[in-house]
Structures are given as C-alpha cells and as structure tokens.
Length: 95
Image 1 (cartoon, rainbow, N blue to C red):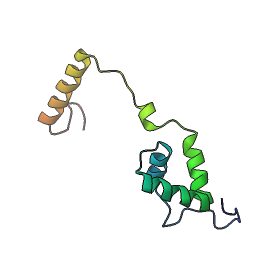
Image 2 (image 1 turned 90 degrees about the vertical axis):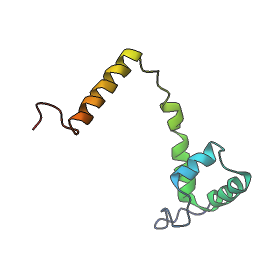
Image 3 (image 1 turned 90 degrees about the horizontal axis):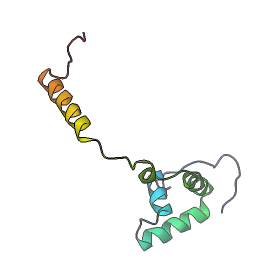
C-alpha cells in the first residue's frame, strides 16, 4: 500500500469505479482485469480503503432476494396500473 500522506487521499481519474471494485471482490472479472486491479489496489490507498468498506456490506444480490408476489396481489397491481394508463397517469380525486 502507498502512504497516507493527507491531501492525496482521493479517487483519481484512473481509479476503477466502485462497481468494478465490487466485481473484483466477487471475482466476476476476467483474470487480466483481476491482476490489473490487484496491482492498482497495492498502490492506491483510496481504492484499497474503498474496497475494505465495500467488503463490510453484503452485495446487492444478497439483499435483493425477495419472495414471489402472490397472484392476487399481482392482479390487483396490474389492474391499478392499467387504470392509471387510461387516466394518463392521473388518478381520480387528485388535482
């Protein structure tokens, strides 16, 4: 890791995006990109710290597993949406 010398602790133009860091953590990148990102992390304190922060939270995939919508609620939602489309997005009683 580089030095924490105060004023240079910021994300630079050449730094990978947060999404790329998440993909790196989840090992979703090709080998060439994995090694390139590993080299960057060894030299960039900001990105190494960001990766550490990101690793403390579950991935969005882990957060987004939701149960299937019951058929009667789906039918209700679809009928409400159809009604809104017929009213051009305006519902009765709204001004």
